[in-house]
Length: 294
Ligand SMILES: C[S@@+](CC[C@H](N)C(=O)[O-])C[C@H]1O[C@@H](n2cnc3c(N)ncnc32)[C@H](O)[C@@H]1O
Image (cartoon, rainbow, N blue to C red; front, top):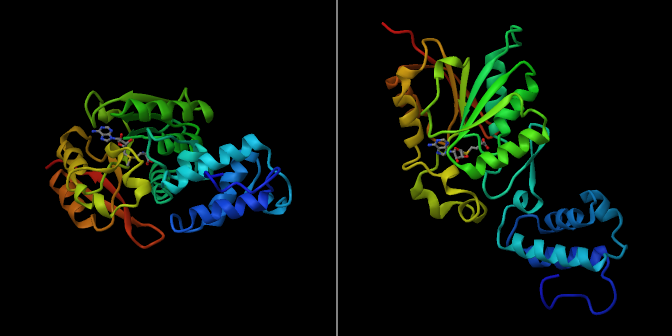
C-alpha cells in the first residue's frame, strides 16, 4: 500500500486494501472504490466482481506491493488503460501503452460508419487506408469485421506503430494489416484504396490547460494536438487532388468542428455525404466523397 498506510500486522485482507486504495484515490478519480477494485483485481488475476465477493481473503505480499504501486500511479492520474495495459474497443481487447492514444468509445462510430460505407462486400475484397493508426484499433477492427479487407495503416510515430504491430499479432491480422511509417499522405498511392479513414489529432493546443490530467500529462502529444485543432484536416483536404473522383474519406472530428471541417472539405473538392452524431449528440464522424471534376 501507499507508504505508511499498511494495516498493522499480518497479511492484509482484500477488503482492507480496497478501503485503503479507495481512500487514497478519493479526490483524484470519480469512482475511487471501483478503480481500486479494478487494480486489485488486476494484480490478483480476478474480475472486479470477484474482488468484492472474496473480500475476506488475504492478499499475498507481492500482490499487495504491486497494488500499492498501481494505486500511487493512478493517483498521479496515469490512465487506467496504461496501468492495466489494455482497453476494450468494439468488443475486443487492445494493448495500449503511453506510445499510443487510448482508443475512445466515440471512435467506434467511425468504425461503424466505415463498415456501413464499404457495404457487405463484393467478394473482391475492400481496400482501406487508416491514417494515424495509433494502437491500430480502427484498422484491426475493420480487418476483423470484414475478413476480405486488406488494410494499410500509417502513423508518423514509430512507438505507435510498435503498439499497432503488437495488436495485429494479438488479433492475428498481421497478414492483412500492413503498417507503414508515413507523414500523412506522403509515399501513398491513395487511389489504390476504396476508402480512407482517419481519426487524426484534432485538439487545439490552446485547450491544453483544460484537458484532464490523464490526457494532458500522459497521452502522446502528437496524437492529440494539431495547431488550432484543424491543421491535420487542412493538410488532408488540401491534398484533395490526390483522391480519385468518387473516392470515400471518413474522418472523426472534435466537438464544435463540423462547420470548419465542412468548409475545408468542400474547398478541397469533397462533398459531405453524412454526419454521424455520437451518444452525446456531438457531430463526431463526417463521411465525404471526392467530387467528380468539372
Ligand atoms: C487521435 S490519434 C488516433 C489513434 C487511433 N487511430 C485511434 O483512433 O485510437 C492520431 C494518430 O495520428 C498520428 N499522427 C499525428 N500526426 C501524423 C502525421 N502527420 N502523419 C501520420 N500520423 C500522424 C499520431 O501519432 C496518432 O497515433
